[in-house]
Image 1 (cartoon, rainbow, N blue to C red):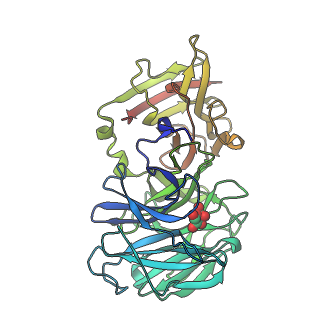
Image 2 (cartoon, rainbow, N blue to C red):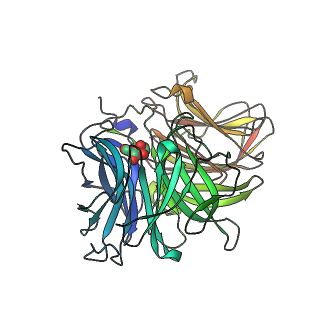
Image 3 (spheres, protein in one colour):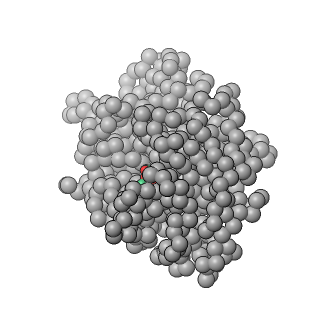
Length: 487
Ligand code: FRU
């Protein structure tokens, strides 16, 4: 338990101290983003699950607030598991005393006897404190595993819609309610797709298809860590207010993120029309940090894109954040054009302008067929110029794989997943990489959101150099811009 300030992200959400897992109750009210989170208020490991709370006006700077929904200690200790929050502006619940009234819908995880059921709680002080409904639970199937309700207002039907899972049965259930208290089952979905581990943290969302005028499709996202490692899958299809119909064959498995940490993601409720922003938990794997453990990803905007294989989920860093990069970097940027990279590795920051390992890069590359090229980040070299540590973010044109290679990263990483990769559907003539390094947090977005890889690295002191490389053929960095975001 040595403090690790060198690995504390600068522009990502981390709790001030102690353990966090899933984002909960994401809701946008009057220009403020609320982020509740699965928090252990007492220790740096999972337990005493409560809803932590933070708010932000820009998705970068977070104000940490007191625990909003604490565990109930007692004979049947109830932990507050994951769920969502809605703005009940029309007072459908009858609990609201003002226009900023929030209702949280979450899983009560009772330990004695072990049972999970759905609870509601309301807040009339802007989400700072919540009062639990005295008649909880509002949905009880007498099940050991039944959790993670995701609720929002389904305008066409004029009702609250809940998506919730039976984790061990690999089923998502849909419910409706007029008042957030009485719930009616609409339909069940599953088992379909990946069923090798428990289903958790579902959400249903209607997304625009890029490049079309008004085309929209429904996407059902489900977290499923286990057999395949940390993993989220999604289904594309239709929702008619009652049931979700998968467009693809039952056994199709679509992957949301190709790294080893992205999990339990859910979107913000009540965003302005046309915005679809969500955030995921980056699962400690093992994450040897102190005094906090666990963090959130960069918030991401969601859409769909037509591909030769069908509609696929697109995710890129939220525009709200990308638009702030110039301001956040205070002009500390690095820009270059048409740089040819051959056999010899090229140091990109000879003047040491970007020291600090908290930066954001956008690059466009032309990689020769058969070449393996990209960037070496968090690099440490000895006096003779030999590499001691580095993490590679590369593209192997022969296999069409964009990959993160952590085998020489140093530090305590999940060695089974030292290399993480995504195979692109088509060879990339112009490859676009967006790399977000935030000390120990690493996210790579490929071709404007076609794929994402999210992981952790733990660079040793002084490992903060940046180079470009190209093996077995040449590469041209058409454009590169890097914003230094270290504080
Ligand atoms: C996912 C999860 C949820 C549950 C919560 C408990 O990480 O297991 O299914 O509600 O975490 O902390």
